[in-house]
Amino acid sequence: MNSFLSILKIAPHHIGVLQQLAPLLSAASEYQKGIQVFQAALQFYQTTMPEGPGDLEASDCLILIVTLADFCNIVGEHEQAINAVRDGARWLQGRSEQRYWSASPDDREYDVVGFIRPPATNELSRSSQASHALDPNLRHRLCLARLALGDIEEGQVSPPSPHSPPHSHKFNR
Amino acid sequence: MHGSLVLKCDVMEYSSLFREIADAYFEHELYEPALATYEELAGRGEVSSAP
Image (cartoon, rainbow over all chains, first blue to last red):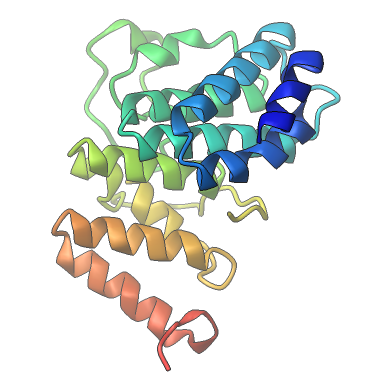
């Protein structure tokens, strides 16, 4: 583990190294360290490539987000997990400029078509609900975080009329 | 919302997610959806840990 951490000092935020490091951090229960390095990496990529992953493999970026959310959920930092998923998915979809979604207390950004919510009461009035796709692996982390926060409806309840299944990537960890 | 949407995916492809969601439902005393999810997993022998 320390060898990979040393490599990161030479090649900061190297995705391949981070992917090798993740299971080692988990095995050593070094979750806070994991949050630190994965959060820093995502911030780096989201800042330097605000238009989206660009030349990076989207699946690699997805793994970064999922891993960060997992580390956050394990240590009880569920709000951070939620932010990682929502901000990360927005970046993957090339919508980083839509930062106003971050102010939403719920996950209406990733509702499905046909799911009716009460109107937004804050600055989200410009776009009170959306149905952006969300990878099942990311939605799963949102589910666990919401349930852990006691937000049962957001975490579990069925939408009244789901017309379309969630967007599906073949990535399952 | 999120749990029910994940559970609309293919149980064979996302069995580990199904299992974790079922466990989370159970942990939060949402016994009815937990049981339904466990039953769906058990109904697929390939992903069930039952003997």
